[in-house]
Length: 367
Ligand SMILES: *Cc1c(COP(=O)(O)O)cnc(C)c1O
Image: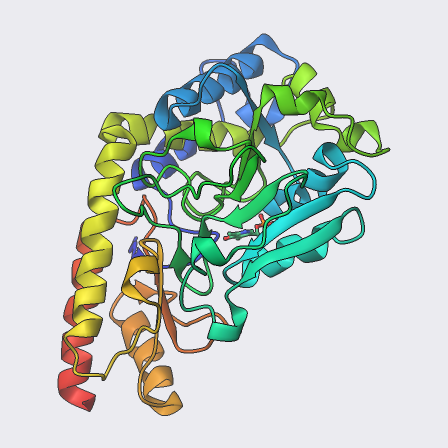
């Protein structure tokens, strides 16, 4: 068996020890004589797995008691649509700060249900930075302000400013954030947010489950007429078991949470992620323009690094040769082209070192 270094943007690499444990437990989970995917979500056994995963995630991220934690199917995109249905009154304005592709998706999903105000838009500048906070056109009585904490495709991330956390100050309107590609990658102050949501398949586990963290007072909002299954309050009241939850994905995410805690928690992953991303950015910046990343340094993502070679022929060669060298999935997203290295929690520091070594070697041969 050969396991390569996997730079996939999502679904993404998982800790090998977690995969091995899941493999070992596949046929007989915990002496039950059946797989965890074969037993009822209403069984005491599964309820214990689910509750433990929630408790571990609370510890890992530091989620206060006055926040509900939901594990839902439908991915991050479904949550983008549900935000307005649950938290915006009919006709109420919702404010969106767009810093890349996923911010645009969030607007597309919410547009049928709310009046969208684009408070700031990085697109005219080519999504190379976070628009300066003092230029945002916020609506005083908006239902919420939505940001994308890390733009997975454009490689733009909200970073701490002036010694304060990365969460922008938006006054008394609740801040909602799509953390799909950066959740649990560094310590954050959850209390600065009204809602945090994330598809699991980048930093938390397998695709098929999304985590939604909601300040409980927001669940009192009446929102808009909606089916029970689209109602976060109902999901919270039933511990995310309103219908059959994605049990396998929830279980596997739970194993990842335990692995992260055992490795030293988010503080340790923040250290590793800073190290990995610095290695790659330094290699890009020291290449004399052979490799290029176009994001301003203050907004460079620690998780996803899109970068470019001088031409398409070299790009195709880099992708093919890196793959042959055991570095998987470095091709850029089709929306921006070029290359992209995703450096999520489960990607070891050695992978970034191997990538940088390959980049030096490739430049020597082609530069
Ligand atoms: C991957 C991603 C999404 C989409 O997630 P799905 O689970 O496929 O719906 C949304 N936002 C961000 C920031 C992402 O990285």
